[in-house]
Length: 421
Image (cartoon, rainbow, N blue to C red; front, side):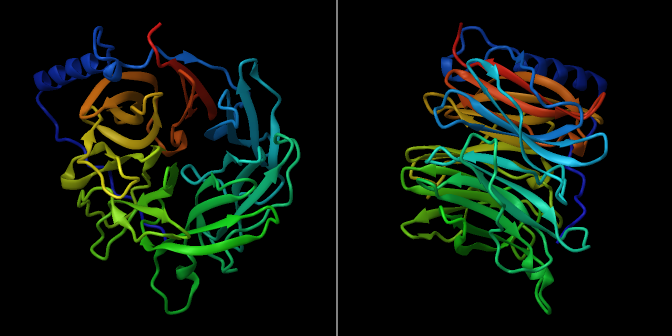
């Protein structure tokens, strides 16, 4: 079920001298602070990193390779004949290798917020997902999952994780390695909207694929969720956690978490009770990262008519969270991304509004309750085609990818040193 998003809450207009003072304050906040504690210092200056993604590319996704020395970059690419393909390339010590094609020539569902991704399994194989149209409905599409056992050069026949067989919305997928050759995934499932006399709402579901390629253990994680906000997942010392935007009967759309417990999953619980009443979907999902029993979640909220990007930490595997810390600079539109530094310090990226048509992609460290200085990665369009930034950390390098809109859609990338040079 789709809703028309309402405009994101914005601060009210201020007098010119107030605006000038605010601009100076924000400029100061974005500058690196010499002598700041290591955990609060801004990452180093971004360096542009050329990618093999050509004009017409969009919706990048990043995942660290199995050795932790490079990343896989995937994207969607529209050709001169309007056909769409999903591509993949690896970046490491020797730069970029050859571009691989994950899939092409299929009825792909292409969306600015709901897009393909890749993960690396424990066996070393790659797994990818994409979305395909089913039937003639505008939002009737299904998930396809495929594996490659030779570094992305050849891909096995795709399989479908959802078993309902209904023409409905299935998407906003998160993949994770579930041990050996097993793949886990979670997604938003709209099968209720295709059932007669059923409530029109989305659910969060999960399943796994073993080496035989058949889906196993399909289960409902939450029977009612927000309609088109991304899911995210991370592995803790106690098992997987999945985060997403919940949807209460009163249309409160706060961030929820479910935790893997033995062979099952916990009941949904809020990361924080923002109390954001929003009778529509903001298309602004959370991000999560974990190490040991530490879980960090970053997200956007417009609760109390104030747009904010927040980050909260748990030290008990996601069972409870400390009060969140605000990390934006006053006018965010969200689209958060998250990584952990070598010592577990969160690195949060988000889009900050600069004027009605332009945003800045910013990233900052957050040690405890202390947000560090922000680093501006790039200026970009605030429209939907610019999509969602993605990040990955390789050693002491932070990689950030996004979609430029002008002069043409194209995936871009930058790298930032995380240690002082």
